Amino acid sequence: PVEILGLSEVPQSGDHFEAVENEKVMHQIIDERKEKERTSRLEATMPAHVRNDAIGDKDDNIKHLNLIIKANTHGAAEAVAQSINQMESQEIITKIIHVGVGDISEADVMLASAGNAIILGFTVRVDSNAQAAAEKYGVTIKEYDIIYQILEDIEKTMLSLLEPEVKEVELGKAEIRQVFTIGKTTKIAGCYVTEGKIVRSKDAVLYRDGKEIFRGAIDQLKRFKDDVKEVAQGFECGISFAKFNDLQEGDIIEVSTTEEVERKSL
Image 1 (cartoon, rainbow, N blue to C red):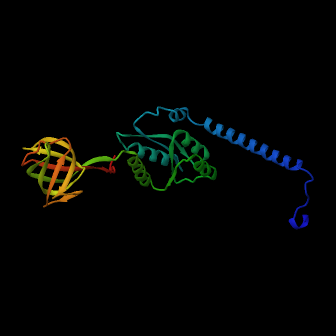
Image 2: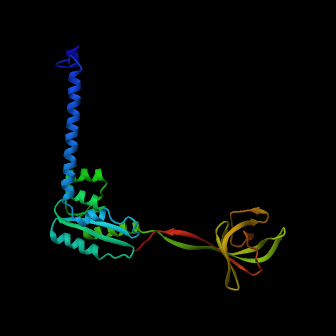
Image 3: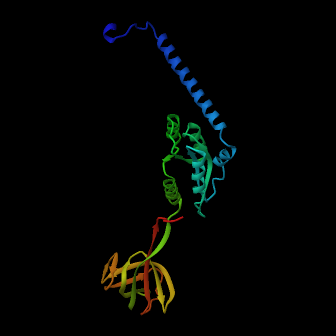
């Protein structure tokens, strides 16, 4: 049986297995200690301001984009840094926490991890240790050969950090042609849609002689006796508002909605 299994020897007791397991545990402990010491040495090389930034004010509402630049020459690194510094935004602070020359190293990744930064490499390579550390710590490394590509990418990144613009979009207008009273207090405006479409539950503004009288959501929207979601231009409809009955013939109802629009410029 031993020959069939290809084993040279068979342990006679559980002592051998216990010794092997203990040896594995010891190797694991040693490896973990080495990794901690290595990480501590790398962190010790970080500038103090970077460590402070990493534990800075977390309640700051201003967006921050921290960057590390590595290039093949000092001139190229400075050119990239100067170009990025010219990109201005009142809502985002772009901070270059380190500029260096040479391939992207594990120390660069540790620095980026501590400073919550993105690494920009210009005509340089990423060594294997750096790549492994970046995957481990979730650090983004971007490589470029042309400066304007860096600027385009940084602008896109900055725009992605900005909150989208909230824009009010007009949907339609309707004129009150007649007012109907339902029950004792409820009033429904018999309207004609003059522009766009009227949509139920959307924000509406009631104008009288050009002045705003009321602002609120449409409560009911009817076509004849049926409840509908929307009524298009050229059709008649009935409109009512919750807790508002001051409706008069000739009033204009404008309906709008809000949309989030991605930022196109800084």
